[in-house]
Each structure stands twice: as C-alpha cells, then as structure tokens.
Length: 199
Image (cartoon, rainbow, N blue to C red; front, side, top):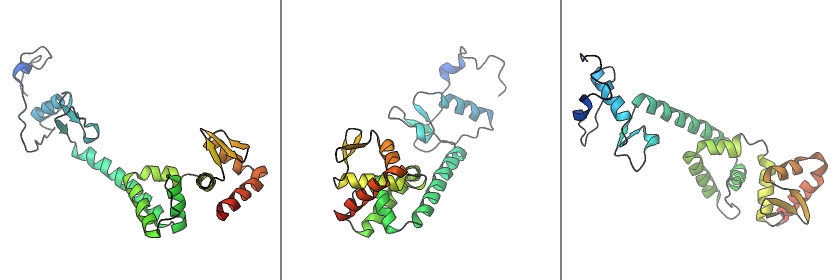
C-alpha cells in the first residue's frame, strides 16, 4: 500500500480516522487488492459485522459474505438434499408412514398424500436428520415396532424404562431395541407385533 513499516500498527493514529463507507447497496471487496484486503480484515474483526451468514446474530448490523465459501456450503446442503430425496424416491408409502412414526408423527388416520407431503417437508428442512432417523438407522424396523407399540399401549414407557406387561424390556430406547433384537426374545417380539396389528 506504500506505507512505511509500522504505519498500520495497532497503536498507529491511522486507525483513529480509518473508516469504511457502507450504504444500502452491497459493498464488494476484491481481496487481491491491498486496500480491500485491509478493509476485509478490519470488518472481519468488527463487533457489528458477522463473518458469514451462518454466524449472523441479532447484535450484528452487517454480514461479510464470501461468495466462494457460501457457494461451497450451498453445494454441500444441496448435495445432501439430492441424496436424501434419492432415498425418498425409493420408499413405499408404508415405509413413509413408518419413517414419520420415527419422527414422532402419528400416521394412522392421515391420507397417503399427507404422509408423502409431510415427510417431503421434513427432509427438505433437515436432510441430515432423515439419514440419521431412516437411511442409516440399522435398527429402524425394531424402533418402529417399539414406537407403534407405545402408541397403542402394547408397550408402556415410564420415564426411560420400557415395559411389556410387568416385564422391563429396556432401561433406554437402545436397550429396548437390543432386547427385542435378541434371538431369545423373538417370541415376545412376534407377540408384540400381533398385538399392534390387532389394535
């Protein structure tokens, strides 16, 4: 920038009058230019300026947007959505109902159209959660049985403890799933399934 060494030191009088004009329109900084890089670094550390849209808080009046980084983030989110909707397109309506149950939604008395629409909205809002709840959930079938059984009072949940009749089948959801997946408990699992279907 042509300044002498020390001209931009923290104690320099330069900073007493240094200002960056901001108006209603976006201000574009080209950081390959020294003046703009200085402005960028100054704004990056300013308490009224958020460094990126994801860091925006009520105390901020302005936001620095790096178009390359924002584009990378947008591409990641869009890729996750595309992958999630690819999995969504493979699902039967019955699987969609089961998936919604794992989200905590009752689906017994709603139409197929509403089931599909509701799940679509959930995936669009948070594709990562869909992968966690459904796509990558290796115990989703047993988890669904437990959730459906609770809704029909076949299994009772008290705090974190899961009961079938008077028997404790788990002291957490993970414990209850492991219990029903145990080979020695398959007769109990089948009985629970039958009771769900009969109610």
